[in-house]
Image (tube, rainbow, N blue to C red):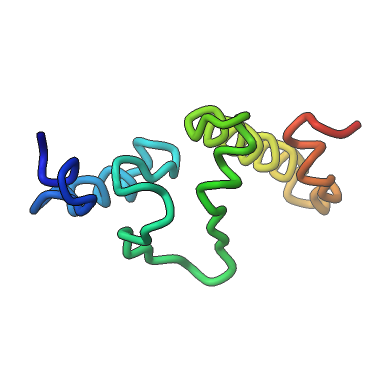
Length: 107
C-alpha cells in the first residue's frame, strides 16, 4: 500500500511526477491520482482567464465516471478549437455556440 493509500496525501516525489505529466499535456489536462477530488492537494498554476471545473461536475458529465467526464470535456475543447480556428486569417472566427451544443447535449 502506498503512502497515498494510507493517508490521502501523495507519497514523496509523487506530486512532482503527476504535475510534470499534467504540464506535459500527456494526460489531456485531466489531473488524476491525488486524493478524493475535493481535498485540494494540487497546487495549480493557472493563466489569466483559465477556468477549473470541479471534480463533481466532471464526474456528473460522465454519468458518475470522472474518466468519461474528462473525455467529454476534452472532446468539447477539441471541437471548439477546431471550429474557432476554421476561419482564414483574413476572416473573423465563427460565433461560439453553447457549451451544451459542443458536448452534444443540445441542438
